[in-house]
Length: 305
Image 1 (cartoon, helix red, strand yellow):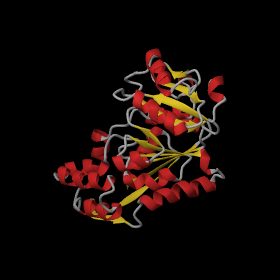
Image 2 (tube, rainbow, N blue to C red):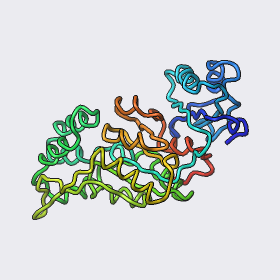
Image 3 (cartoon, one colour):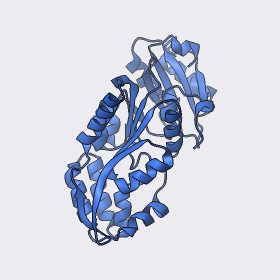
Image 4 (cartoon, helix red, strand yellow):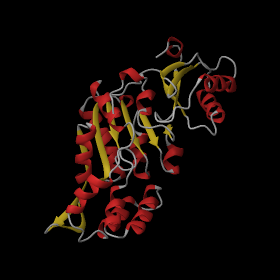
């Protein structure tokens, strides 16, 4: 952190996608000019063109953040304000589908089964908070009855796309002493493989019931939903002896809301509107390395993806 940022109670962090650098000196000057004289400390680069931070010297952090977001309107840049103290977190709890990976696994399986559009529409409504998650999951899995188990491996190998920055996020935090957990309303078949590839220490998700080499159309209870995600964050935090402010949670769907609300940094990542509006921190444009810049990591401290 820069010396100027360290004098402030909060730090403004500007980030964009590593693949599309959009920050430069002109943008930083425009941000400073839009917030009024002496509202922000001098900027410090965390990653050239991709991430910068400035201490917030004004008393009204929310007003400064609103002004900055207005100044950045139309640019693919995220602006967030975080407390200056305790930025580097010791627990990462992450959703998987549409967060660590670009896909919704159940939609991919449904596409293989020839009912992709129907299931995807249910998924979208559930993630927007328009449907009860557990009921929607039960309905969608029921539609997959008789799908060969081999379709899961085929789907993982041929369809799953990892979100940019996911591996760097997990490995950088682990390398700096953080514990990492995937907690997903999806399925253990996928979370186990995603966790192994990205470097997460633990993974929890729902279990698909099978018989005679095919899906039965049932989820083995209990269903891991909204409450279970929150409980996983809290129980893991307590098991590790951490304070709430030492935790970071990230997700995109309505079933992540309670988990995000109980984390020190609760990050809505390219999230559904109901989640983005509720979360204190939102990343709409950047990749998952943005979560490292929020913690004050510089590019030379970040593990290669």
